[in-house]
Length: 82
Image 1: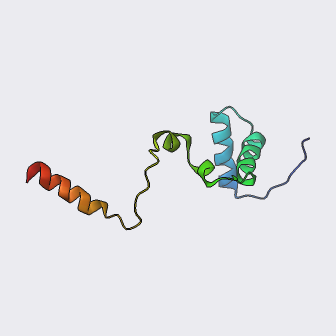
Image 2 (image 1 turned 180 degrees about the horizontal axis):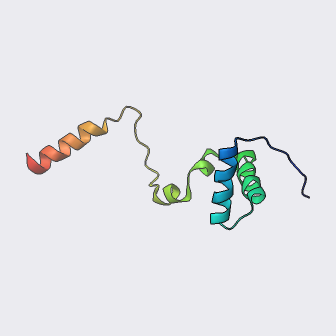
Image 3 (image 1 turned 90 degrees about the vertical axis):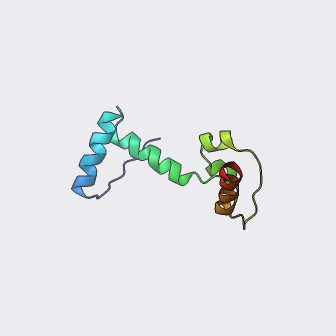
């Protein structure tokens, strides 16, 4: 069920949002509704906050909190060019 909502926004913001909505062939109302829906839907699992692309490349490997990746890179460079 739709309900009316009045918003007071900066004129430039409104004009920019209208251009964006038109470019993406959506009404400004539906664009705002979609955005607000994503804000209102808090994921139950922190894993849900990860984008699908990042999730797809996840290896499941747990890295130590004190891992110094710069040291590892330096060691690999020395092995290759040492």
